[in-house]
Length: 262
Picture 1 (cartoon, rainbow, N blue to C red):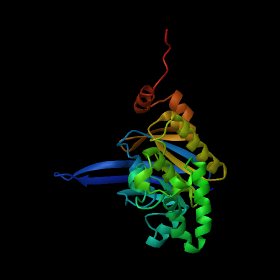
Picture 2 (cartoon, rainbow, N blue to C red):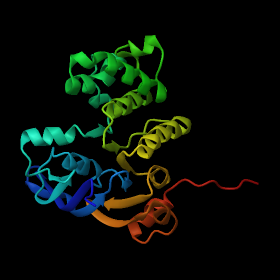
Picture 3 (cartoon, rainbow, N blue to C red):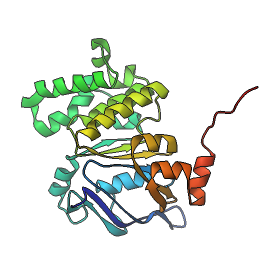
Picture 4 (cartoon, rainbow, N blue to C red):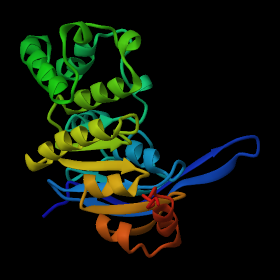
């Protein structure tokens, strides 16, 4: 069976600064995601997680390697083919402040991708879907839905609007870059439940996080990135309970733990 996503020896090198020094943001990365599968990508800031998301969608040209999305090589595809492939994906950015159009209302921000792809003739269906998604994600009430994104929403609310926006076109593959970073424990669980329902319907997902507990809840399998290198992969339960690489062990050691009190 052809993998829905296949990354082969992906290397991305940035150069900059006064000395034009080269930095390997990704170094020889290889992995795959099957249809209906979820994969957690685990690592701290600077590990290359966001660069990987952009590379998968063809927004960055690699120095080496390839990305096959739905069986097509993203780096040999034409501009039109890339757009078509991207439309089969959803993206939830790490930054809900920069990724949402600030002048639109909450409802309009979620509907926008639908209208761009389906056209104005499908507006009523787009509004129905947007309202349903927003309610499912915990955003409801006409006053809130009609308010401007930049004026009335907290960071956590913006993040939930971004999740609804990423799901509006019923993506085959959803790329989530720290999608619950601004949520408290209760809303984090609600969001994971929403995403898991989509997985049960056949959606594949890549879930980016620095939190191994969250990685285990989001996906069965995970890979650990450190400075752009894949240092360990396996079942998320094993990564959490029996890590092998020193970096993974350090991530586990840094997790908060309950301590008994006298």
